[in-house]
Amino acid sequence: MQIKNELRKTARRKRMIIPNKKLNDMQIQNNLLGLDEYKTAKTILIYLSLDDEIKTDEIIKNALKSGKRVAVPYCRDKNGNMDFYIIGAVDNLKIGAFGIREPDINKCKRLDNFENSVIIVPALMFDKSGYRLGYGGGYYDRFLSRYSSASIGLCYDELLADEVPRDEFDKSVDIIITQSSVIKGKNGGKNG
Figure 1 (cartoon, helix red, strand yellow):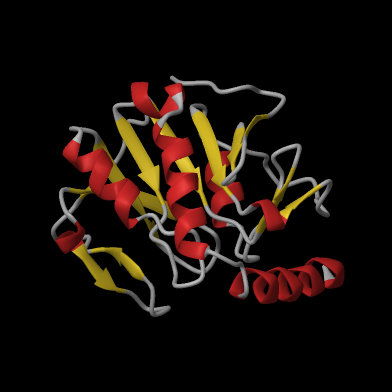
Figure 2 (figure 1 turned 90 degrees about the vertical axis):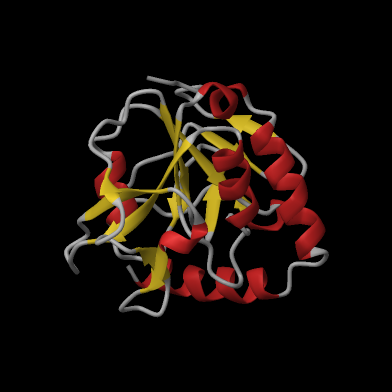
């Protein structure tokens, strides 16, 4: 656990000084939008980016504009339980308990059917096998353990490692997208 915490601090510092962040974010977005798994998905499950994360707002706008359903995470409790809620616009968001944007669950419908979807997963860093170093809450690992469609991680080249520490509960993503590459993991891209 100590190793992961030290690596989280290092990754956060490194992410804060990524050069050409706006340009890299745009290239990562373009690589995602060109991906078959993304194009054929009817529903996009996507995180709402924090200031230093790869920006997802343009991806959300593009998905809505192209007629896809967009669902964003809502953390139900502090035990790693998370649901996704369908948003029709960025206006359906509010600032949540942790100071991050989340769906207004009074205005949005909970997503129960994950058929024909892909999930875009956040992380501080990924390794080339698709394992991620998350923020330590376990929300995405818990969700991914019961999610069967394609999972995609967005990552800067500078934060793609050969290997990150992992434990038995950590789940890998199927595809990693950086500003310079698309890496399909051991599961390839799946869509269901």
